Length: 233
Image 1 (cartoon, helix red, strand yellow):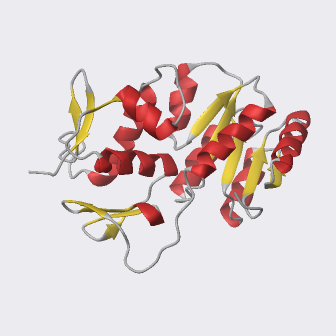
Image 2 (image 1 turned 180 degrees about the horizontal axis):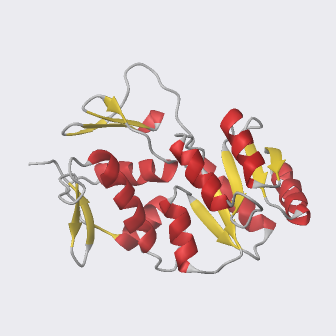
Image 3 (image 1 turned 180 degrees about the vertical axis):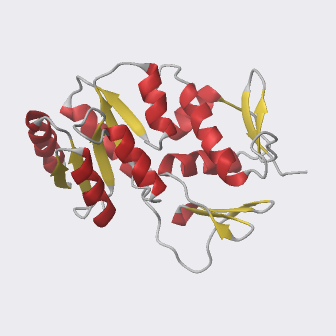
């Protein structure tokens, strides 16, 4: 972690923003704040952030809409969503729109900082020297050190979590991986069996790499077991 890493905190409750800003600053990050969705979208669109802490319930444009618009703009900054609703639908919807993680209020500031560190730790890229190390699966090329992938030479756009899932599947080519295995490997902590998160991200990957999403040739569903990446036949 370096001092250059910058976090955008978005919440309409000033007391929460103050609490989060203090603790995130103390953890060694640089912070900026926004109190509504419109300002958050403008700042995130015009400034480079390493991560966005984004409340769902915002005046005007809510957090879900901010997340959706950022992903439509192909701004793939990791997003940690905060929600007051302990509801599976809201969590899954946020992930479907492109969020990387979520926390349900009330939360401890230490937990927020821990999640931020976990997300950013997985994004640390090793310095590139010489040729790019890559994984080739048919027309799909994956470059782990650059967090990049192409299909037939055309660049693909992923959220960090989508890329990590794609990479892990490719690293285990031909191996059947359970949803719980994928949760543990990619999300790095226990989601208490919330395997729908895996299904949502697999669906996103298929939309980007499969010639036909209803007839996947790269990421196969192994009924009752999980998923497997294989070379298209």
